Each structure stands twice: as C-alpha cells, then as structure tokens.
Amino acid sequence: MKLQNILFPSTDTCTEEPMYFRRGDKVLYNWSSDGIELQKDGLLFFDTYFNGFSIEKWAKYTNIKTVFLTIRIEGYVRLTLMRKEKKGDTVLTDFIGEYICKAKYGEVKEFTFPFQSVSTNGIYCFSLTGISKQSGFYGGFYSAEIEEKDIQPVKIALDICTYKRERFIEKNLKLLNERFLKNPASFLYDKLEVFVSDNAHTLDIPSLSSDKIHIVQNKNVGGAGGFTRGMIEIHRVKQKHHITHVLVMDDDVTIEPESFFRTCTFLSCRKEQYQDLFIGGAMLRLDTQCIQTEAGAVWNGGELISLKHGLDLRELDACLYNELEEKTQYTAWWYCVFPSSIVSDHNLPMPIFIRGDDVEYGLRNMKHLVLMNGICVWHEPFENKYSSFLYYYILRNRLIDNSLHNMNPSKKVFRTILKKQVYNEMRLYRYKNANLLMQGVEDFLRGVNWLMKQDGEALHKEIMQLGYKLQYTEDLEEDVQFSYPIYEAACNAKPATKFYQRVINKLTMNGLRLPVKRAFNIVPTEGVQQSTVYRTQTILNYDYSSRKGFVTQRDPAAAKQCIRRLKALEHQLDKLYDAAVNDYVENGKQLMQLSFWEQYLELPQKETAVEAIK
Image 1 (cartoon, rainbow, N blue to C red):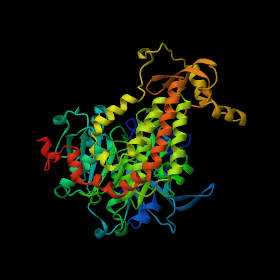
Image 2: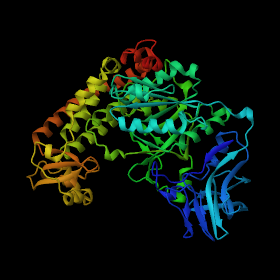
Image 3: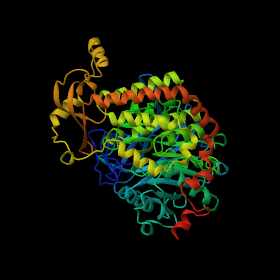
Image 4: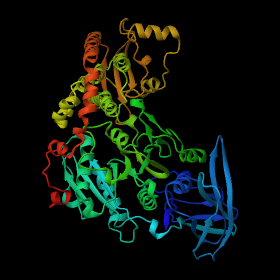
C-alpha cells in the first residue's frame, strides 16, 4: 500500500528547497522541472521535513509491517537507506542498506527496496549518489505491507468556515477539484467531501458547488458558529455519504495537497486501540515558509504554550525534534482531523464566536493526537493580524473554557491576572483594549443564560465598535505621518532593565503621572515595549503587514475611568466569580446541544447542505 509520495518544491505551495531535499554542488534542479539531475559524485539527501518517513508514528499507531522505498531513476546511482533519530544534541544514523540502481540513460526505471531495521525510532530516509557522468531522479514513494483485514475505509469531510475570503476559498476549492474531487485517478477521488459555511453570504454557490462540494449560507456567528454549522451538516448526512472523519480547516491557509493523502493513508491503517485518534497539521509561517509556528499546544489553563514554536524546518535536527511526542492538550483548527462519531446531537462546540472554540472541543474530546512532518498548512502569522476586538474574547472565553474543564484559577489568582492585563494596556495608552478586557469578564459573570440568549453577530458588531480600527494613515483623523526609521527603532527597543527604572515605571503608570517628555512616536501593534510609550503624548500604533494603524493619546482621565471600572469589577468578582464558574460547570452542556444550535443558527429542522443548494 502506498503511504507517502516523494515531493519536490513548487511555486504553488512552497519553494524552500531544503524542506524537500538537500544537495551538493553536482546536483541540478529548477522548480519547473519534473526531476533532479545528478552528475558524477553528486549527493542528494532526503532526510527532510517533507520526504523523511515518520516510522516512529507509523509503527506505534498503525498496522503496517515492512516499509519499502520505490524510486524512479535514469542512469547509474547509489541508493543509501537510513534511519535517523535525535538523541540529545546529536543525530544518530543507522545505515540500513546500500544498493546500486542502473538504468539506461534516456530510460526511467523503477527500483524498490525494503527498510529492514531493528529500531523504529525517528525517521526513515535515503540519499542518492551519482555514479555515471549524468543521471536523473524522478520521484518515488514509500509503501508498506499490510494485511487486507487491517485496512479500514476512510472518507473525510472537510469543514471550512469562511467570511469574505472568496479568493482563498476559490483557490482551495480549485486545488481540491483538480487534485482529488474530479480526478478519478487519485487515491482520494471518492474519499473527500467538502462542506463550506459561508458566514458572509458572498460566495457564488451555484458555480462553486458540486456533488462533492456543499455550501450553505450561515448566520455570522464567528468561526465557532461556522464550524459548528459544518459539523451539523456533516452529522446529518454522514451515514448516507459514509463519512468516517471530519477535517476542520481554516479558509485562509495554503495547503500542501499531500497532507490530505498522508492523513487518509494513516487513518486507513490505524490500530484498533487508536480508532479515536486525532491528526493535527502544523502551522508554518506564510511569510517565512520554513519556520514553524505551532505543532500542537498545551492550554495550561489559558497560559497557552505553542509546542515546537520557531523551528527552522530546513534543519535536520529540527525535523527530528519535531517527530518527538510531547504532551498536547489540543490542536488548532487550521487543520484538525477527528472521527465523525465524536460529533453528535449532544457534543457540539461552544458558541463563543471566536478564540477558544478549538481549545474547548479538544479538551473535551481528544485522547490521542498524531502530528507528523509533512502534514501542515501555511498561515499568516497571528502577529500580522492585529484586531483590537479580540481583547473582549481573551479573558471571557478563557474563563468559559476553564470553567467547563475545572481549570479555573482561584478568585485571588484571577484578580491578579486581570489586573496585570488591564494595567498593561493602560500603560500603552490603549484604554479601549483595557475596557474590552473588563467587559469580557463582566459578561462571563452574567452566566450561561446570558450567553445562551445572545445574538452572536449583534454582540460582535457592538464589540468591534468599542475597539480600535486600523486605517491607512491618510484616513486617520489625527495628522500623523509614518516614518519607517522611527517605527524600526521602536521595534528594536529593549525593555527597561534597571531596577529603579522598573520601579518608576510602575509607580507612575509608565510616566502617566509625570510631565510629557516626547510629543510623538510610532510603535508596532504587537510586541510593543512600554519604554517606547513612556512620557509620550501621541502614539501611532502601526501594523506593518496591512500598512494601517490607529492613534492613541496619553489620557489621565481615561486611565482614571479604567481604574474605577477595574475596582468595581474586582468587587463583582468577589460576589459573582464562584457562582459563574459553577453555573458553567452545571449548565454549560446546554450550549453543546443540537437543539440549542438549531435555534441559535435559526436552522430549519431537516435542512441539509445538499437540500440548501437545491
């Protein structure tokens, strides 16, 4: 059974060559070619992110037996099979076998050899050495022996939520159609079904829909509502369409199509004791494609830890470290696969609009998570997507998620957390953010019944009006100009290190209680240092990615109002915190029911995606 294809770089997905192969001076390749040319003594290594084989995961979770490598060769080359693993700061290499592959030049020939290794730690990989004056490598694949009885039928329903991202949706649906849905030669031809929730009602449904692509217009209740609508549609037709798994995926990602293939083959071979496993896709940076943002995460009660953050996946050591399993509590919904049996009339996500729906559903349902090199998406880094309104959801949804899973800190500890975050925004003159944080906590204290009665779309519109709005500088009411040197200096600023500076900053609210020393500065929207705001009157908060910004002013009166609101909220916490937590513990399950969601989304009782198209 074929398990994994050998990949080459592509301008359609990723052009980081070392993520696919590493080559010496006597190896020639360009992106438009369908092969790699090796001259005599040219060396080509495939111990890489996309082309190593994750034998440790396959051996643990699936029923495969002997693994084979098949390569397509022209000319005369030496093939070396290896197993590599990380041990401390070193890379251990186990040389499994070496073979001579010889084909006439001008004739491409296939060769297949087994990996026969006692250990299954780490990855299987291979290298090629040119022996003749000129030879070529034209791809190949990994396969394995597996008994027919151990191969399970798999059909994956993609659950995509979108809001005004037509360009991304159209691109990804085109890719799916060309590679899989309309390609009878593809292994995945009848193994994928796509469900799209259009929260903005802007997609051209007739032109994009097909017998395998189902699009419904959905009430705009955020990602949580969009993904839940997809799950409801999938749940209603999963018997009819023989759907075994759900793949929740963001609409604005770039995907390596091979990820779908590897996910499907892995699930087809899984062992009986791992029927309920989740498969997660790593998030890689869209602007720096070799850098990993996250591969699984630990919620830690809200102190989020992104696992394996910042790894450079061009490096062998990073790839081997990436394969090591660590404790994970959830995997984000940019690419998350789980059994369709998990979705039921009584086990749907929470209606928290955005931020934390994937966390809570993972905490509730995930027992085993598999992450492997080569299963990934590229996504714009979150620091490039500043949204002031998110401050409302940060603490509110954290409290909801923690309450449902008995993870909330004590009242005293949470007061400290709240105070720290509010004061931090105040010290940056971002008083609207401070108020949004507090409003989120105030609304949590209102309990389950309040959340159940909310119109998520109307509430979100209200929240958006309370935050800062990014605009081009020429459209801002204030007369400010962008200067890159000033902005760059703020990006490179260091935090105060001297003890007396930190004391003064704390006692004076970062200079708010002292006279103005500087009229104007430009700072980044994310990662801003308080020292860049210290005793400054006007701040242009600039989002370099969008080339937009917003202006904040030093305002002692606004700061006093925040402090008064914070003190009042602390009194509310003393009275209502424990009761609100217990309310979510006792009554939160009402928000996970199909009956609630049908009313919340204003759904006809029997409508399915297919019927909606008709």
